Amino acid sequence: MLQEKVVVVTGAANGIGRAAAMALAAQGARVVVNDLSVSLDGTSSVGQSAQQVVDEIRQAGGEAVANGDSVSEYTSAQRIIEAAIDTYGRVDAVVNNAGIVRDKMFHRLTPEDFDAVVKVHLYGTFNLCHASAEHFRRQGGGSLINMTSNSAVIGNRGQANYCAAKLGIVGLSKAIALDMAAFNVRSNCIAPLAWSRMTETIPSKTAEQARHVEKIRSMGPETIAPLICYLASDASAHVSGQIFAIRLNEMFLMSQSRPVRSVHHSGGWTPQTIASHGMAALQASFMPLDTSAQVFAWDPV
Image (cartoon, rainbow, N blue to C red):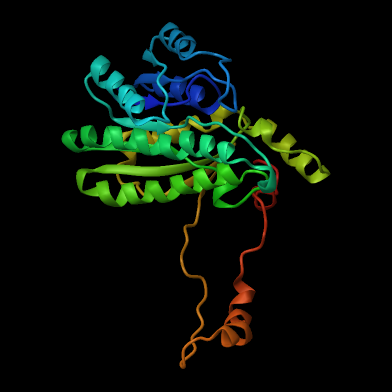
């Protein structure tokens, strides 16, 4: 499906990024494998490098090039896209997968923890999307595949910085889809449910949490790769502005914010009538304070 396509994958040395890079190459894409090879919190160098993934792709008969630039700064993000242009002459899709986590309950979260996570996830997604936008516009098309999280679109404890960044990506992705539609550029989000370095941080202090962690241990990152390959291909030319979740053999189209209930007061609202009338009418439709694990409470199929 991807013969001769050029795809950039960020955070591609491990987990979902690595699985995506390998699958894209197997489908014929030429892949720019980007990774800083840092620890999960982004503070130290560790783990498999982008070059190791490139070597694996080449050994399997595919084409790939390694890149070690950071997504969090605009000039270095530009170099990631330039690596695709310089090596292969074009860029057809970008998979914004790079990320770090610094999970803490909100009252313990530091401004530095918040800033670091937002810089990599939200700024990183903007940087790569913007750096590729002009190339897409000139060539008359392209695909942006932005990784969000069910922790953001549904909710999770101990991840305020991560949720803020990942839900910001949803809004950014939709805005890009609207702005770039005239140039045949599509932008979609994936909220993956898979076992990776990111999900190793999910707390399992209660029996319910422990059961949830055991469920997702069975879902390898390779289960996310087929959807990434599809969205990078011309077969998805009509798909834009959507949020997909995927879990083992299940795929979900996620809802987006729309009015669910309304109430009218002909004389205008006062704080008192909001309390006595407005909230009384709306309360039955309030969203519960549930988490991703509670919403996806059944075993993976």
